[in-house]
Structure formats: structure tokens, C-alpha cells
Image (cartoon, rainbow, N blue to C red; front, side, top):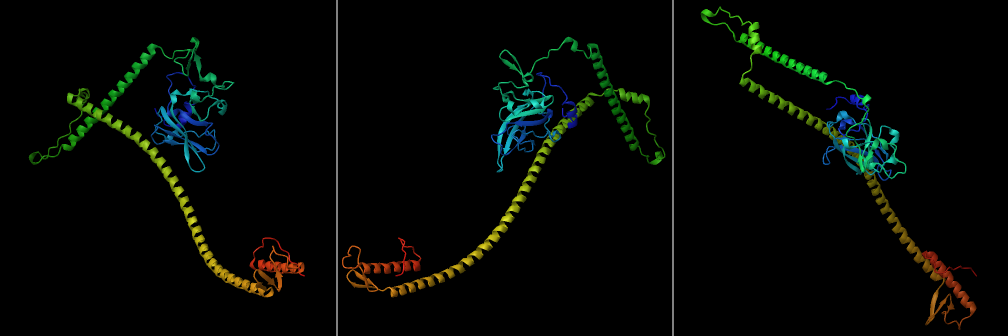
Length: 432
């Protein structure tokens, strides 16, 4: 049974007290809110969940994204759902990272009637009492979850252990077959005689409604028959043209005869056939309305996705246009840089040629100032002073040797200065 409004569910179902009976069943319409505890391995990214009818079907509900490892998503909007009578759903919890990728943390096929009751106090629902990637359902009577996500390795038991289970031998029972109550707490609402009277009264009311409906149909049929007779009667030609036939009056005897006559076998078959056709049409109409509701939800989801994709495309188009403008400006700057480089290259080649020419001129002038001549084999003089080899120093004086070395040092320093090439060993020239 699908309730018409969500407010009615909030007013009536939430105040119902939970009873641990096996016959108590839960549906999707009984779920008000879903919470997550200890989700993910790190704090990066946001979390959201989707609900599916099967593992291969598209989601019929998607929650909002919360950047919290213990998210408390907003309440379900049951007005937009068409599968409120589903007793089992597939829950998937997703983690949305900053780079735009989504990954599945939990995939859980949930049977609402198989969940465990853990109390109605929100203060008892602490992340410390549950394992990683735990899910809590807020349904009528309190909070529910699976017994597998509750930690059993704690030194102090969880505060809702009394609401959770009771042990009988080695078996763990989460629901009871029956409830034990004191005799003075049990009262009979009706006895057998009153129940029989109520049943008979209901049957009489139903039979009376059936008779009234049958009489209405008969009266409508008779009125339609007399109206057709009035339309068919017309003035005759010739000698009988002035005679007008009055319509047949409907007397009580004819009315009673029509009302109490039994339908024939052919009429019964026709009525049964029409009844079957009506039932088929009603069934098809119901199926089509359900399918329409499902398709409406799917179309709404597709429209939302389409709007999100359009928004992303607009953002990408704006980014592409901005990048295109930047690229055009960069290409113009690149062309200017190339022109400047060509101009600077020409200037550089001109200056370099002038520098090389000036260096050659300075070296020639330096050779003119310090002339080096070859006297004989392996004997050279600088400004007329002989500079012997380092292994033959017998035929030279110390004064001549020092003067020649000074000239050589001066020449090396000047050459390194002109050519901008550092000497291997540091030289300091002092004038004589």
C-alpha cells in the first residue's frame, strides 16, 4: 500500500514502537533517512549514495554529496519515488574525489526486514561502536543496521546491546516468534459474537450496495429504451397522417417486471465477458500507471544529468575560448619575438665581426710592440733579448732572463685581455 503523502507517514509511522516479531515487515516507504559511519580510508573527497532495484539497473534515487566521513544525508523524498513497496534494494556508496573520479566504497543488497534494531537514541549511534563503511537506516521505531557491522572486540559492550539481540544456547535470535505479556495487560477488543455480527453487517451493506447499483442500471436502461421509442415514432403519410401515437407510459407493473426479471444465459455470458474486459483494462491501466511513474523518475534523472552536462559543456566552452584568446595573443607575441631575434642576430653578427677585426688589429699592434724573432735553430728573441728553453739556462744571464720573462708575461696578459680567455695560472704584471 502506497501512502498518498509523506506527512501522513511522518505523523503515524514514526511514532510506532518497534516490536521484535518475525511477522513484522518493512518496505522502502518506511525508510526516512540513511547515514554512513567511518566511510573511506582518508578525508579527501565527498560521499553520496544511490539506490537501485537490482545490481544491473539504473539508480532511481541519488543523494547529495557530503564532505564528511560520517555523513548524515537528508531525508528521502518519497514523493518522487515509484517503488515504495520494495522490500529489497541495492545500496551503493560512492566517493567523489577532487579530480572528478568516482569510486564505489560499498555495494550492499539490503533486505529491510532482516535489519537489526539498535534503539531510538541518536546519542548511542557513535562511529566508535561500528566497523568501517557502516550504514545506518532511520526507519519507524528507531535506527537499524546489519549485525555484521557492529564491533564485538570492545572491552565495554555497546549501549544498545539489550535492544540488539538475546542469546539462547549457541543461537543468536534477532527477532522473536511471539511476545510474552501478563494476563492483566491483555484485553479483548471484541468477542466472537460481536465479530460475527460485524461480519454479517458488512455483508448486508455490501449486498444492499450491489442491489442499489443493479436497480440504477435497470432504471437507466428503461429510460434509454423509452427515449429511443420516442425518437423512432414519426407521422404517417396518407389517411393516417393526422394520427399521432402517444409514447408508451411506464407503469409500476412494467417497472417491477423489468426490475425483477432474471437475465438470460446469453446476457450472463455477455456480462461476464464485459466484467473480464473491465478487469483486464483496469489491470493494464494500473501497470501502465506504474510504468509511467518509473519512466517519469528516469526522465527526471536524465533531465538533471542533461542539465549538468550542459553546464559542464558551457564551462568547457568558456575555458576553451579563453585559452584560444590566450593562444592567439601568445602567437602574436611569438611573431614579435622572432622579428626581434632576427634583428638582434644581425646586430650580433655585425658586432662580432667588428670585434674579431679589432682583436686581430690589436694582436698585430701587440706583435709590433713586442717583436719576436728567430735567430737560429730553437733560439728566439723578444725585443732583441734571448729567451732560452727551460732545460738550457747556461748561456744566459739572470737579468736578461727576468726581462724576457716580464715581456712574455705582459704579452700573455694582453692577449688574454684582448681575447677574453683566462690564463691557466694567474699572472700579475708590474712595470719596470
